View (cartoon, rainbow over the protein chains, first blue to last red):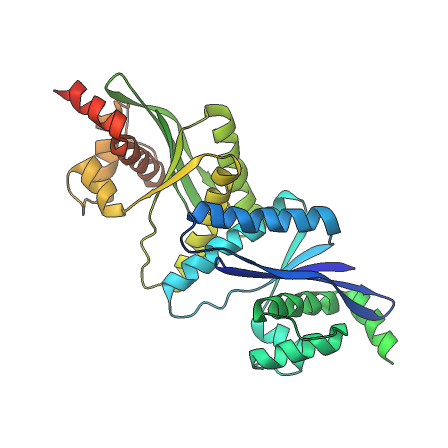
Length: 167
Length: 167
């Protein structure tokens, strides 16, 4: 099973691919698309859309996983996150890849064992779980890996296999 | 000059094409895409994306026009509107069509002569300006026409020609 995790944002959009097989999770391509505020909005969103589309075409993930948006008090931020999410969801749907959303607390619970873990803990645990040489460079990349890990472990087939592998 | 106006929303997304030539504005295709809340979000956004893409392919507008989002107090609504806007902007950008945003007050000022006009006034004035047989069926369709009219009149070339036509 291969999951493409995305942490959507217009200025910085993290991505990370997680493969699960033989009772193990390992990391695939990962990174962060950054776009400048001086660029037109449609061009910034197209960068994200094309990025997701290219990753799906190259890596053929079984699913795209995103965190359910935490809707804070700031409507301006919610609008901006919404636009980036729209670009990601449309790219996945246009490619016919399943989209899954997981609550932020569930992602943290899965990755850190604690639903209110800090960003630093997520970066640390992602490194451990995926056996990376170093922590992901950005928290966006780490968050993308984290939601992909959460989705991979939530899959009934893979989740139970991984549990067997861990026994 | 041909402008595709869009009033983005996930549950209901209005569209209306406005042609400007020979000192006159007239209406092209218009309508409203509606998606059901029980459908998955990515499928709903794909309906909007594919709808915009098909209209651009068929009608080859010079620009896509949207209202700048009014960011109210409700972050939940802002997130939802943002997602629909993302789908629209990506469809336009992927097709290489210019995207333009106009402030809601400016759209109302242009169409109704008053920046704080009510929805009913916008529907009424859109019918008059475009010479429609009846008011647009939905306020989403009327709002899409209104922003398209605003953009067509904001174009220096067409705007002045239309003013000449009106003299």
